[in-house]
Image (tube, rainbow over all chains, first blue to last red; front, side, top):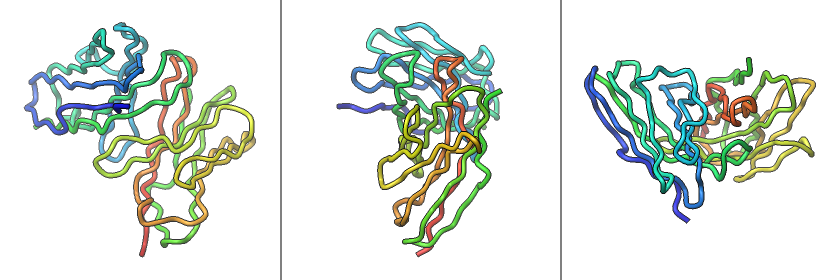
Length: 114
Length: 114
């Protein structure tokens, strides 16, 4: 069974640039959630994708967007990067949407915006 | 609004000593509660969860947690810690109004003294 994998592991970008982060969900999981974890804080929910549709969104601006592909892998895109976007971005997959299936997390992508 | 509070930012215990990490939640109905652990450079791993039934929940790695509705608490315990338990621990509650997305505490960093 393959777990959740994220790429890249680390990334450095300049303010104003755009970034794409990638996530492969665990085998058999059809739901992917993205979280932002700033240093010293708990994760904050960005959005969730289920069967290629956005299905729930946290308090993040529209410059945070995403995609889910037919194989259930997912991308997180962030436009017009700001210094405060520096964080660990975590992807989590789960078995199905809208219930209490436990989340399985990847190791995250560490984004630094300078 | 739902929230999770972990009052202790850091806790230091000696190897072999007992451990209790505190978690308080704010939620109107019966909550779905979780404890996750995050080792440095790693994603989040589920330790245990409470949905209903027995209020004392057993998890992996020898951890347990007790749900106390009267105190709105879900404290994590371990009778004897090992150096490998040094990590950050997060308590979370599922937001059932938003596809069970997790609302997280800020985490407690566990430091083990030799």
